[in-house]
Amino acid sequence: MEDKQQRNTIIFNASKSELFTPSNGLKSLNRKLRSQWKIMNNKEEITLDRLSNASIFALCGSREKFTGAEFSAIKTYMETGGSLLVMLGEGGESRFETNLNFLLEEYGVFVNN
Image (tube, rainbow, N blue to C red):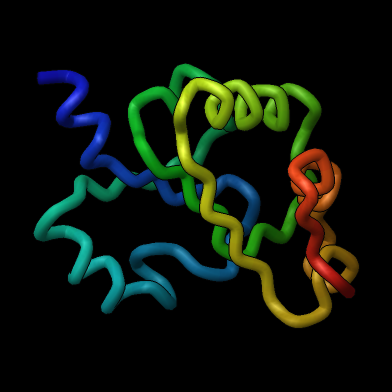
């Protein structure tokens, strides 16, 4: 039962002053997803324990820097089968004052300024 719940859970991060959250900017997406998915918000530090409850972790316009421990938790989460959705706006890292490219570059992806 726990595996089925995990497969149907999306965690949206809200701990880094995200530009978009399920209740702000993603309301119609939230309504569409709720019929098939459990939607959760993470407002605390990102840890592997929190991420292990979901199949998708979404970062929607993070506007603060991530710590090394948070990057480590995200990497371990992805290595164990979790999926990461990253969205950032025009201007990239410098405009949003985040350090997401540090994580993304390890996977051959980066956000242009």
